[in-house]
Length: 144
Length: 466
Image (tube, rainbow over all chains, first blue to last red; front, side, top):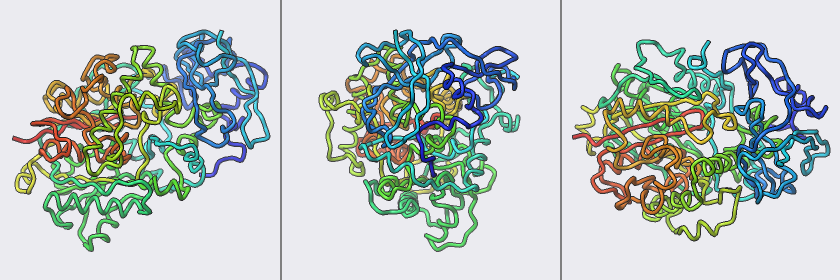
């Protein structure tokens, strides 16, 4: 398997998630929502899991959510994260539909004060990796 | 279309590849981003493998009653095969760190030992089951070439380790019942310890290659599997009060069993709870002792009818029940409806029903254990305690072979025996039921293997025949 030279940056042009990254570039969190049943569909790998609806519309959400769970990663499992460790990565349940869990990094908070289900909001910061010159604006979670 | 009937369409390679496990020193993962052996043929086979458990493509005649189930997953309908076949021979290859062997060499050694154990000649085995996922497994052609035979063999690619180490006996029973084969070997091997050094890929690569993960998870450092399951462990701790000491009790029990097992990779390395707790965080709340080894090794077991097994040399261990459960979100752990459960909740009830047994009847348990938390969740989900009570349940010596309430991974499991993806777990359960194990459970009559991939789980109930 050959990975892109800028791995692990996202491929912002990959059609299934292109609107997500375009939204991040505008400073907006957008998620696909089923036109038929109004539920969010995450990940958008096909039809709506609830009703089978095939028409999804990318919809801006507030960016507010709760920290569902996380890990403090001390070892760089890939070399591009060598200068990032230790970092906090985890899942955020978005307020508009807590069944949608956004994978993100947790910023602006000491790991010791993190609590499961604590509220917070999405902030947009550049993703940077060791050995990769380009950066991509991405949604991070800042607990309150 | 209701959510209870709609199968998720899952990229085929999830079903052809391994869920991860870790011994993990920092540089290990660098090797995962080189080359991956996966031919179009293998991917097609992997896709076919998935279809086997798709209820929309399974003939209605094969469907048993399907229990009402939570929305995030569902059981596979399986025909009753209880008491029809036996596991008549088991064999393990040498389990080692990097050894320079190929997976086929390892597999052939395991098959030789399984045949010897059963007292069968190579031509007596006319069926073979393996997984196509890495293109390196022992095929029928490899079998014939190794043993110098030319006989016809029934072939299934629904075999191997992980979930399939537990579900293969179901398909084998159908094949034996219908006369497609008389004796079938299921075999699995890995050489990841060797291949890691040669930079030929590894257990994390498939997840980095999957494009939703590559674009929505990996950029945030939520990768690879130790990070997924550390996140699951923290949520389990939050929901149920599970503690590091309780996860440590699992690691300590497995290590103690490995210390007693000559074939275990960690047989010379004791682990106390104090040592576990003093170990630094890897990806908190995990320490490296929460994560499995990476090994070269493999195993095989030979199945035949119970009737025929009675004429062979070893005590008869019959297949009493099989169950398979599925998660609708497949290997997207981040989105699984019940984040702190496994598809065992969908697999185990059908297996117990088929066997006519309950968890209280079980004398010894072996579960696919990439991480301590996966052991804990399966112990809960198979029904040995209420959901959420796994932590208090495993404390102390509950899981120990000598007097524990639920002897668990009595060979050491993937944490401490070898990372051979569950095939050695089935071998161990058979030995326990024969009374041949190194860390032998007294009078063990019923044993279970719990298989797991994330997308699926399997429950294999074995019983010493009377």
